[in-house]
Length: 409
Image (cartoon, rainbow, N blue to C red; front, side, top):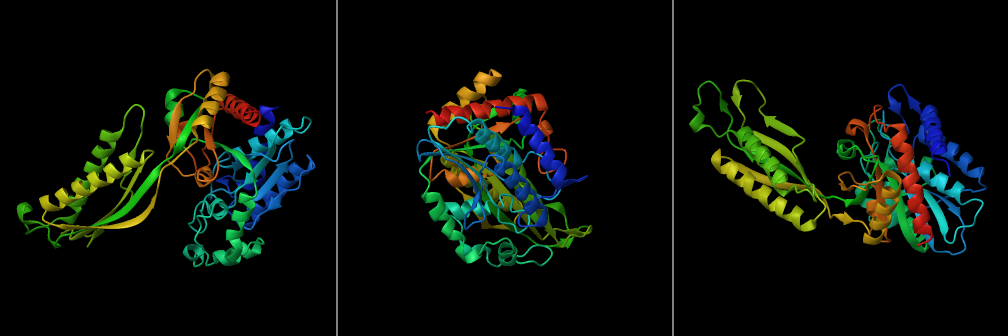
């Protein structure tokens, strides 16, 4: 086992597929294909040739004494100007796990999967390959997707040997695997581990998400001649709501449970200096690991927005943009992961994942857990993404120990 070799491979991949602005492995494009060819050459050194399923996911297999299988997942695609660790860390540590067992046949089979288009950065649909394998992808929802250059998703897929209409066949590939566990290592993409000064953390699951658009409607009026008490200011109602949403998140955050509420977009009409805003649209993104807490947060947000509308003599309409239920990870694997992290680092902080990951798609199908690596300044999806190498080596060692524990469980 060599933690240094994992870092060397990550640096080599970054050198091959990055510019001065960061990683450029946009899914289905030429740099992403170069990355896969590079990785295939690494696999060839172990006499392994990967299989591509109908969703474009690449599977490398090391047969064991049993067909029962431990799956290690990650993704080579990146956002434009992305980081050197996001996704690739999971693939490279998976490769090291294959090397670790190359000369001693494992008691179970080990598969490393490079999921296709985890990021969704080009066409807007994240977890594309893993959702096809999991059976949660609806073809009709994505068949009309086009990137900013006008290329259709269906054409980009076909250029890579994938037929959109047949992506659902990836389910049969996944179902044919006698999966014992799914393991994934990923950079945290947040500041929690840095705040704790801990190299690695145990992930409890991925947040459930409630995402909505609120439209407050009042009356546009001249700002110089309309007295404050007589205004129907849609922006003030939206602003009051946003402050209330923050208080909801603070109220529901406990030492053992972190939640978030975010207003990420604001659109004001008519949008001129001398007019009272007659319409204001804001987005609300709420996330929690507990489904009951998430439901209460949404109910409280509706009350907050309704009261803010009344205070400002405006109306409010809600439109659901997207929702996904929380995906808690397997309790037994969480404990194994905690053991592995503690044995290497002396501590095992537990935290939820705010971002979604391919692991979330595996939860309904097999026992699943993730481990997080320290994220410098909480940054990801940018060239500044980093983990101190000493911490990165510890995290890699902890994850490989988790693989050992799972394989022999």
